[in-house]
Length: 296
Ligand SMILES: *[C@@H]1O[C@H](CO)[C@@H](O)[C@H](O)[C@H]1NC(C)=O
Ligand SMILES: *[C@@H]1O[C@H](CO)[C@@H](O)[C@H](O)[C@H]1NC(C)=O
Ligand SMILES: *[C@@H]1O[C@H](CO)[C@@H](O)[C@H](O)[C@H]1NC(C)=O
Ligand SMILES: *[C@@H]1O[C@H](CO)[C@@H](O)[C@H](O)[C@H]1NC(C)=O
Ligand SMILES: *[C@@H]1O[C@H](CO)[C@@H](O)[C@H](O)[C@H]1NC(C)=O
Ligand SMILES: *[C@@H]1O[C@H](CO)[C@@H](O)[C@H](O)[C@H]1NC(C)=O
Image (cartoon, rainbow, N blue to C red):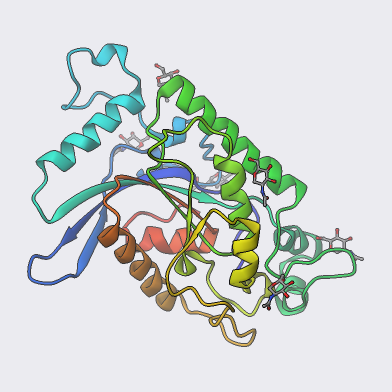
């Protein structure tokens, strides 16, 4: 499903808290507001630039700031705040920070712009490609590659100047455009040895499933062959069993599986700092589940 042709509409961070009701395993999510520009209703998603705004982190002091706070960066102090929130939280509450990155421009995005959305939706999107390019499980265009490299340069600058906490875990949609975007975004960065860039491919982080061939993922053998060291979650099928080419997923069905993938991650991964590389429609769905305003 293609909702917007502006890639990396969200290269930002969201702080979420998860509360598990003590009597059941049901997890309730909420967005912790006031730390990132993106969750403020007056922020404009169209003009938001994560590279001009420190990923959206608001400059401010926190009650958890230490005596030497003046010598620390905003991200160092925020990291201490998140640690302190978790240290003081009730047993069934947990705070996590999610870096949500959209893939760079894919051939399907370029083709939608080229043919126009009406002709794209009713005809071209259903084909594998045209005479010159393929958009089934679309790969990144040159522009898409440079967008991912821009994210890579920005991460490097945050590590060097802000001492930003880098992700402790990386999760990626199985579609080729996200695999390539994650690889370029995090490749070659000076990451801590105990938290290397070793992503896990998660089926349920894929884009909303439409009839469009760009939403049809490649087989598991191909994904494994392309990124041999990466993890592929248990149960991931060889072939795409969800895309049919004739039916499409409703928003409520998509939100249900977004909650399932969050539940899966929140209940098995005790990391605080998480990276998701996904799609505009899927990030929009994750934001709905987290109770975050629309920001795509
Ligand atoms: C949201 O942004 C507006 C305009 O920049 C600002 O006046 C307001 O205080 C912000 N709200 C919160 C909750 O940070
Ligand atoms: C956001 O910015 C875009 C581009 O400048 C503008 O067209 C749009 O009206 C703005 N939206 C809001 C809600 O201000
Ligand atoms: C936040 O602080 C940094 C460094 O002190 C400064 O460069 C930046 O312009 C500030 N950002 C905002 C939005 O005030
Ligand atoms: C195929 O689509 C691309 C847009 O992605 C366009 O640039 C190209 O000219 C098209 N090829 C043909 C043969 O129409
Ligand atoms: C992954 O990224 C590296 C750069 O960090 C690049 O050299 C390599 O070709 C990429 N791998 C694939 C399969 O795209
Ligand atoms: C898996 O996909 C690749 C790339 O599309 C293809 O070349 C290969 O034949 C497929 N393998 C199987 C077992 O279907």
